[in-house]
Length: 452
Image 1 (tube, rainbow, N blue to C red):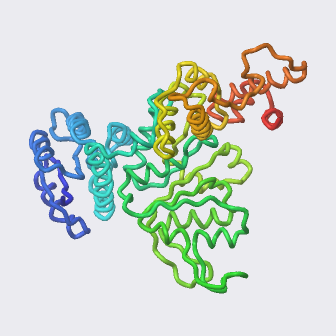
Image 2 (cartoon, rainbow, N blue to C red):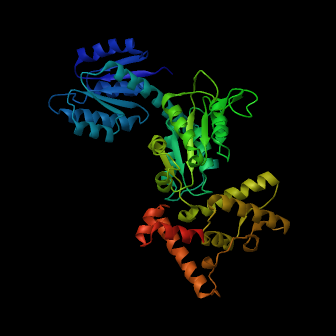
Image 3 (cartoon, one colour):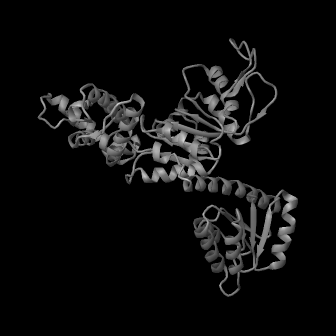
């Protein structure tokens, strides 16, 4: 379906002049003009414009309130359209209010035409992405049902964040403890995005030197460094048109982080040893399980790269903060292993579910999946039709046992410290600096407790 643009302005001459001028700046779309609120809403219904350029004052009696009312109506009727507010009543207050009420941009009259045209063209792309995502949902083909399990209050904001990330093309940073599902979320963003027909490429930095890591990403020409015996394509090239997932991005060497930032900003890269730059068009999804504040303060993660990624940050909660999702997750993993292995296990006993929900899951969802898989094999071996308490094996920590303990005084004291620190970390979303301050410890003492 061809992109369309709706211009809404009570000044008919100004709107028509703008409609005639825009094609000269690359806006080759159907352009419709409305000089009243009623006509604008009719055109919205009949032509479903991708982008709307809206004058904020549509009548002298109401002033800017007329424009804000129409803006709200546009967003409510079609959240996928992008509204650019263009008005002679420019002020910081009106601009902030317009953005808060759903506008994509705010410009004062007279418009800078190249700037306005660039915003319109970007609006077309953003609208197409959002409509593509909505179409997937309407067709029932969204991968959420089979890959992103959970209905808890802790996970609902994550679901919304993933939906938003999939509808845009900006870089994404996913943070969370090991085993919370960062890789699953990265793949899901790709599967829901307009890039899903192209490749999803995953990379986790190893222990190589800067040249080897740079070669993995940028590729190299023969002779670029010792051991480079032939030309090699890098992951930037392999992910062209698709998604590049960089896991543990804080492990990238600092010099490579600088180069990556340049690639994200300029959309070009130069293979090691090459003379010419190459254009690139991949979507970056990065992840880390580290404490971001610590990584930034230590220089392990460059601040400029973090700020480029953090415009769209998704924080995954640990499983202990979403225990109401455990039955759904356990049932999903049971069905998965039964399908893969041809086993016939129907469900869990009530006691088994109670046991699963009592445990704190330090390894998060990954540990739960491994636990269910092991329990399924044990149940199948014992000819059981369901998973019972005796089939479940959990890593036991003394502090989590309900029975009286025989630990020494010092062991009990250490156990208490661990619980105190863990609870403070949970309340502060894993931020060690804030957790240490809350319980009156310096950060080095908190680290020592965690290390033990």
